[in-house]
Amino acid sequence: MSDIAKSALKLIAFLVVVAGCTTFIVTALRTPIPGDKVTYDAVFTDVSGLFAGDSVRMSGVAVGKVETVSLDGTRARVHFTV
Image: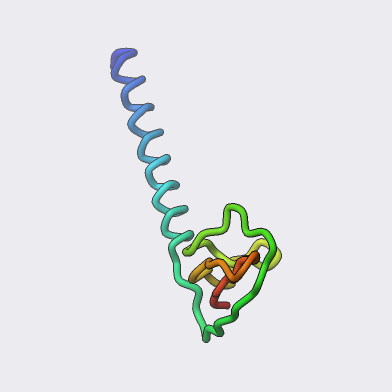
């Protein structure tokens, strides 16, 4: 087998592994949170970078989702499920 064929085979194997890892990560991030859900509203003075659809995390573990972010006077009201 020529050097070009060996290199092409290694590249294809690498791309298959990367595609598999990417699929696994995307699937894990999109998995819905199981169990009963409770909705809450919280008022914050600063929610920079927080958007609807973001995950709510406790100690780095996703426990819910942000439903809406809206203004409430000079503060921001965040409606989320946990």
